[in-house]
View 1 (cartoon, rainbow, N blue to C red):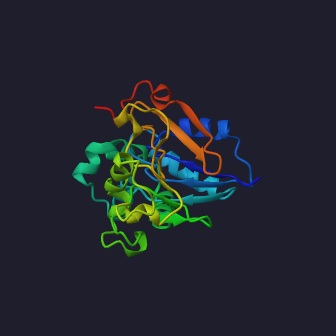
View 2 (cartoon, rainbow, N blue to C red):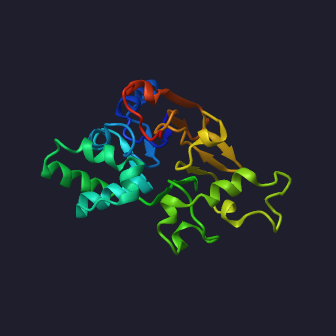
Length: 243
């Protein structure tokens, strides 16, 4: 049986990713979709990228780009350190690249360059890091940065009045465009929730791996999900993205 497995934000937590993949028991038939933010947090950001490149050679993998990945990509390309990025995990990412040579960095940059802004599967499910603002869908999005930054889609889905029916003129047009939407970007820990959250047809898989949470994978068809241990337990001497 072919499964579609969706992974939340990793944030440099390679040890948690390895544990999670083991718990999921990934097979060669599975399709793996990663929702972005592979870097910035725990100390193994460069190693996460290396691992994912290797993983994609053995499995069908789709890599969506997150806002942290866009920052790292810009640094790898131009060697310019964004001040906000540096304070929000960029410092640990730069340090993880200290012993990575130029050719390896170029290989990683190519990997970042090939990431998708979003992916739509054969069942009209959308996989995107953050969201989109156009009521005509992401392909009509005016501001490309919304793919990795927008929070309005999730906030709308989470707070919508459940009494509004899909055939109502008041039902948000953005939510009607897709069967289901899978996102990361906004940790469920913000809502005191440690597992994937659902708002209407939007599923949030970012369970705060970069902070105090776990790394999560969900199977699209059954909604069965797996989690790593709390990521911080793998890096007891580090703060990750915690202040």
